[in-house]
Length: 178
Image: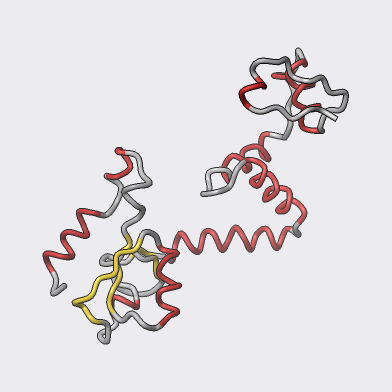
């Protein structure tokens, strides 16, 4: 059994030798020692392209993206086509509410919540992202309108702050009965 070392003693002593490597250490060592490491092609160009696209999704890394791709490859062609059509439908039919910036499907520029005459137009709930709206609506307690800011100032880099809808928020506050 290897001895456990505290951070202070770990730098003073050489690392204990181990004869057993974990699978990831073994693969990593083989990869580093391989002279042809850069020549190894893991996936076809089409698979890798789709992995790269899925990896752009929030909280999805390359491993999860690869799982998505291999899941899709196991589906029947009709099921894959249905997913592709659903993605295209969302892009074609879903709009952004001109007041609160919630996504919606329908006529006009306002979502159902902003169009609802029963809503208290003097109340404005500022939320970080679209997914925060549904839990609030499920409570059926809040009867005002919403404003989706698009992030939080504390979590963003300086250049990302400009992407927030702060200008529009100020306009809403100044130009409405809020």
